[in-house]
Each structure stands twice: as C-alpha cells, then as structure tokens.
Length: 421
Image (cartoon, rainbow, N blue to C red; front, side, top):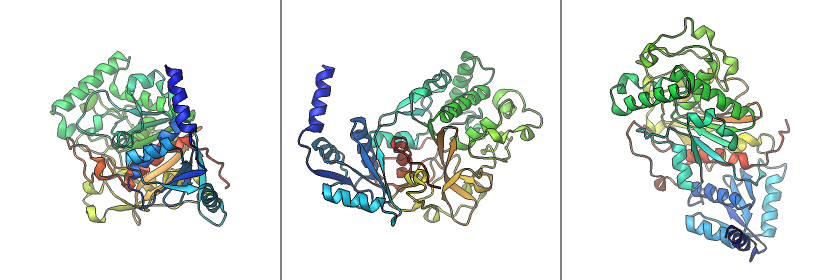
C-alpha cells in the first residue's frame, strides 16, 4: 500500500510538467505571507526544490509549475504567478548579476523541526508553535528528559521560547507564587529533577542548556525568543555556580557568584550582571524592557529596523532578514530587547531600535552550528500577559514580525554558499 501511495505521488508531480515556473511573490502583492512559507516547506517534503530569491520582491520563492503545487497554493490562499522558463531565467540572471544586491539560494531538503516545550499546559502560548501550525509546517516536541537522552540529534532545527534555564521559573515568584499553575509548575519540575538524578531544578536546567549547546556545536540551528535567549546564556556562564536565591530552591547563592561567571561559555552575551533579587522580574541587565524602566514610547511609536545585508557576500543574515518591509513593529516579552553593549563582537546584529541600546534580533555561530535570538514574546501581541488568549494568525497573515520567525525555519534547507569576505 505504501509503495502504491508513493507511485501515485510521483505521478502527480511528474505528469503534465509544463515549460513553466511558479513565482510566489513575497512583496506586498502576497495575500498570505505566512502560508507561503508553508507551501515552500510542503514542496521540500516532496523532494521538489525551491529557489529562494533573496531581496527580489521581498524574498520571493520560485519552483516548478506542477499541478499539485498550484492546487496547494490555491487551497491555502497564497498568491502566485505562472511564468515562462524564459522569464524565470531572466529573473535568475537579474538576481545573480553583480550589479544587484540579490541572489538565489536553492532549498532542497525540509529541515526536521523540534520545539522545546513543557508537556503540561501553562498560561501562555508560543509564537513559533502558533505560526508553525498556521503555516502547516510539521514539528515535534521535546522536554528535558528527551534532551538529556540525546534526542536532539534527530533534528536540524530547535526552538525554545518562554523558558528559564536558570531554574528560577521565569522569576514569577513575586506576582504568582500562590497561583495554582505556578505551584504545579514548581512541583512538577522538582519531581522531574529528582527522577532524573539532579539535586535541584537549576542543575537540571543547566544540564539541558549544555546539551543544547552540544546540539548547536555539532551543526544544529537554535532559534530562541522571549525569556529563553538571556536565561540560556546565563545558565551556560553559571556552570558549577549556584545563582538561584533560596526562595526558589531552599538554599542561597554561591559566594561571589557574579565574579565566578564564565562568559567564554556563552553564545551571545558577555559581561552581564545578574539580578539576585527574587522579587524582581529581570534575571540580569541583558534585557532592556522599556515598560519596566518607564521609558516606553508607546505602541504607536515602538518600531525596530532590520539591517540590509549583501545577499551575495552575507547570505546568512540576508536570509534571516527577508521581508516586505525593513520596519518591524515592536512587542514586549519577558525579555524584550538585548543590551547592545553586552553583545559579543562576533555576533551579527540584524535588527535594532535606532539611536538606542535596544537590539531585537541577532545571529551567531557556535562550533559547526548557528543560533538566532529574537526579543519579545509575540510579534502581533504588543503586551502579552499571563493568561491572555493566543493570537489568531488569520488576522495577521502578512505579519512582518512573524515572517522573521519563518525565515529561520527555512534557513537550514538552504545550500549556503561560502562568504566571499
């Protein structure tokens, strides 16, 4: 039966192949940017390659004009244009010309995607799982036990979101320590730590952080948002050090813990100062949250700007910043912005709030792999609060902020060229 099904799929994709191509525009002519990424992934799952046209009409896609692909595009409401082979060659010649800041990257293989997420329901959502579901891109889930057992080796792309790798439960202690969901979260975490052989939750979380580090070092891609980026680097720097106040684990911090941090172990941040006050929300000075500092400019004036990179000389940040606009609406999260002065020189800044210390979007390398950190919780929910309903992406199908997430999803599928610099 499986062989017959495979033969039928092959027939659908090989029959009636016309001398044409499909162009999926990603400029403002696109009706559903988010589902367009899903169709590109759908093609890769079926061994149909896709050309990603960097900086051409907002980072458009081009593929073969197969009947099944046209049907899928129409079904998902994604705008597309049928073009001749001659027109396709003309477009490729244009984007590959040394006179233009464009390029074409071939996508060949659908990356295997996994999301690090707790098995129990907590009163917040995750922008990445929301957009993967909306775009109809499949993903698996893992939690601490699977990570510690080496399950990440089965995947190409890992996402972590509203997680606190320091073992301080998001530092929600002051506001939510008596809430039923918080009490259950602590109880479940402590039970798991004991079952996995750890004396404390913080030690388990730091061990998970090191396993993720190994995954990236061996060639994986890590994408992190909200509280994950800064808490992750803090956990790496604090290996062998107790940085958790007694309110969370019953004992105090290591004497001179701040001075014992090892910034050589982190991915993106260095020289940061930890906040040991359990009644304060922040974990360190990495995060700049204007709402907490009283410097917020208001939603209508909160934007950050994407950098424009050379598609031919800097293909990686070019892929990760493809969009139909360079101006992205700001949005808050448990970690909102990264302090520029604490970002390592080797890290590429891809999006920042001009004339400020606020950086929203960064990329870097670690070993044979790469990581990308994106500040904020939900690109279309300016102030997401605990217990708020999830964003309905049918109302935001052309979201520039969500497009940045999906750039990261497709990134591992690209045949990346060596940089010319």
